[in-house]
Image (cartoon, rainbow, N blue to C red; front, side, top):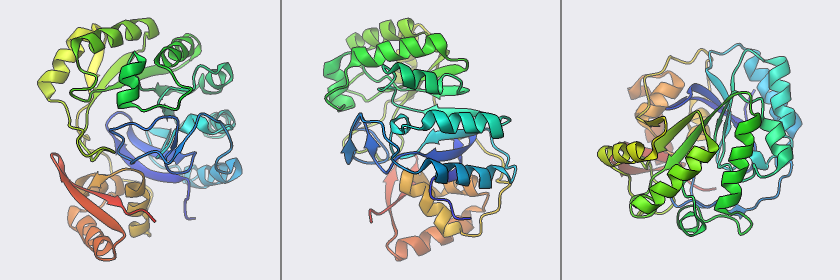
Length: 312
């Protein structure tokens, strides 16, 4: 069965072997972050709707998970904001009832948790990973470029209320862009918000892939370590991908699998080797063919040569 809404499993820096579930069309989001590895937002919205058919998502999950793959998480992520899908709660309930031995994660920008009904839908998810890059509207507009209805205070309030009712854990990501949100005043505002939200863990991140805006640069490790100390909260700095176990689910359509992954976010040949359980020379052969065919493009970054799919 070819999968339209599932991708991976991918090696995640935070979640181990993670099966991705894409719930909205590419770049349908409530933010248009300057650092987003998926490119510019093409549909900036806060409207929740059934953007892709729930029945098809459930059919794909049933087909894949029935093979009993070795996974650490089933993760709602992709190239848009998953909480925009109006039947997210229904899919969570399905997974809990039918495949309850798999943990669920939600990668989200956190902007819609001001809605009580959404907080109830996600309350039983094992790990929720929201973002908070700025604690004031001015900085938020510079780094996240949100929909006009979104405010920093609203985002923070929604996370505070979610933390009160969730049964799992919350890992709050703070993405640092030097020169935008790393001034001591900004860090102190973030510190105050974090102490109000009380996440189980703060995860500091910075750019290591091509971002939406070419001028965005990554922070140095010493700078992130300094920020972590200033936050005065349990904090880790997200490192590079760890070595992952090989996939237990064989994929015959390797080129299609590679395109599934790089269509959503850039990856190096080494990343793809770990995701697909292939030797690096095999992956390079597929990448060479896709480059020649004009299906993908590449860009040299500090961590290596990244590949991503050309827009169609």
